[in-house]
Image (cartoon, rainbow over all chains, first blue to last red; front, side, top):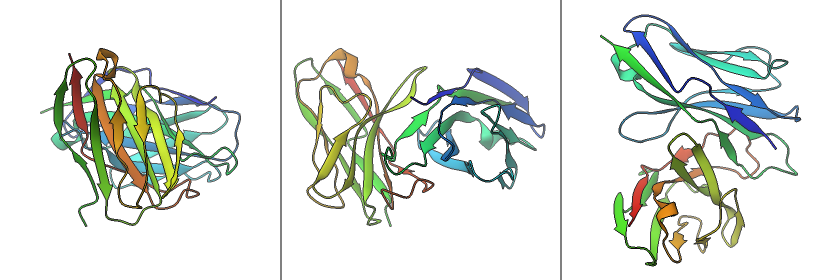
Length: 118
Length: 115
């Protein structure tokens, strides 16, 4: 079974600085997708970025980028030029790429709460 | 488009009561699912559906029932509420059951407290 681990329950960053959130996962599959979701105090789950495992190039979305290390099964999220609106809980998630076992199921990590200090 | 809607936003039940959490989407998505969020555990899949008339169990299905009579609606029923079901519940949808890289769109969540 696949698992996702976020070992940092809480992180803090100064406004305009850069912060990296860690995520590791365990799987025996070679085809899968990884996601970072943001959950602000409003509770709404918002997709931040996604990565296909077969792509070596790291995904980027404006100030958000990932460091995808497939061999190490690591998927960290870097937030550059942090803003007050980035304060939220961030979840790392895994989704199988195999049709035979694909339930569309997202497997989530425990979450990391990010505080942004002005 | 309203996206994914959930009602109610908050609910308090007494142990043993039953209720239905409503979920609807107007994006013609085939895949719909229910998750529960508990502190320190992330979100866990309860039930999912790959299309009208088709449902299956997720990771934590006990105590919950679902049905999918239309593409748009996917209600979650608590048969006999227990304090262990105190949680925040999210409904999510995505376009295709086989679209493994598809974004899942989440509803705003329902905070349920069982006394």
